[in-house]
Amino acid sequence: MLERGQAVRPLFRMSMIIPLLLFFFLIKCLNEEKQKLEERFVPYYILALFIIGIDQLTKWLVVSNMVYGESIPVIGSFLQITSHRNTGAAWGILAGQMWFFYIITTVVIIGIIYYIQKHAKGQKLLGISLGLMLGGAIGNFIDRVFRQEVVDFIHVTIVNYHYPIFNVADSSLCIGVLLLFVQMLLDGKKKKEL
Image (cartoon, rainbow, N blue to C red):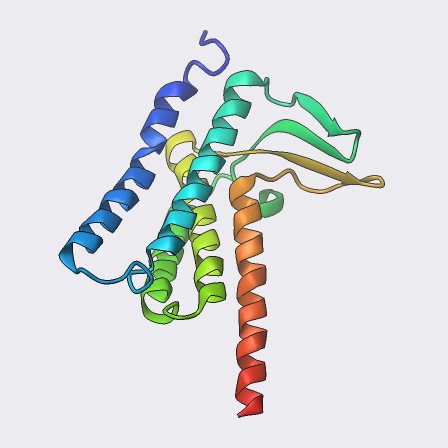
């Protein structure tokens, strides 16, 4: 029988391959063309790498230091760190359908990179929102590929309602989508003013 966290360590090391590949892709892009950092959208990719790093580090800490189901109160019963796994999407939707998540996430990641390259120039809010979504999508994708499940641990209880347990990647995705919505509202307002 493996000790707690023993099987996860090689997976954690392997899960760092994707961020490293993204980093080397960025270096290659910078070396090919001598453009300003803002024009190559590097800050948005750095934001994504930061999110991936924090996401994977926090998940590794939970898996290697907590037993599944264990909870540690942070702010009473309102906020807890709870070791949980999810083989589906939010609220366990489509549990066990990894092939579906591989395809959808790959398409989403390609789409986000395309939008960063084609539409984020000169639009910081759009670039930040896309960088957050890219980091979140890749963070959970790493879990699905190497663990066959997503590690969740942020557990919020409001009154008697237990909000579904989530992680840093989920938070990044939600904030990114919210900022994208704000950007769309601002764009719509600008078009009406013209």
